[in-house]
Length: 320
Image 1 (cartoon, rainbow, N blue to C red):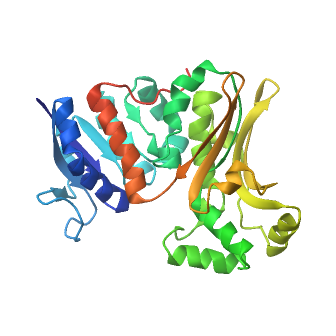
Image 2: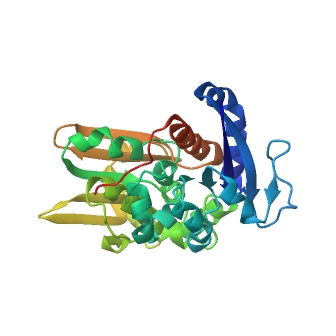
């Protein structure tokens, strides 16, 4: 039995769920031959009450990180988590993260760590619905042709409410009240959250250096009830679609409100679920659908990544 010290950055909904799931899966971890110890949880306010396993060390002092053999990042943001992770990654130790913004916007710095197998980030695109694992492994045998995806639950919720007759502003306000949308909600409704996720996906099937700036981005803030009704009359629905396809010798990538047939897989997945249609020359059309947000759902993929690391599987390696 070997002991592995793990550190956690952030203890919001996702971070707390990760801690609880690690505790619940302790038997599986021990079957691997590992005694997993949580060395510390880094937060801004260590005095705030949190739903974590008894005895968990919650602190605002990051010094414990260098004692860890594995770090899980669940704090969000871009520069703050990267500043904390930078010395840790430079020492050659692995990181599990769900941070699509950091991956999308700081790829120039992070790519080599991913190529070395030190980054695990299944949860960064569709939370607990596995798409990165297949794209980074078995699907590479098939020549990639295109993908279309609905990967932002906030926009999905707002557009579904608008189909029920709500004005955009009212649907957005309700999404914020329920905690689905950030405040301000620009990343969600402006399409940038979806663009971050599309950039992450593109590095597995199009180009390992795929840049966020290569994606044309338009959000749902210009969609009107008239647009929704016009689509309905044509037997269609409006979805915020992230798409990537071959375009001559290059790639066409976009995020935009798109009219789709009402029976399209991206329309039938459900208002609170994410979905992706992937097409490869040899594998044909594949459909992925499932939960794309939420603490427990996201934690399931992050703890899965932890288990992969403990077993000895490398992280998610993009195209070279």
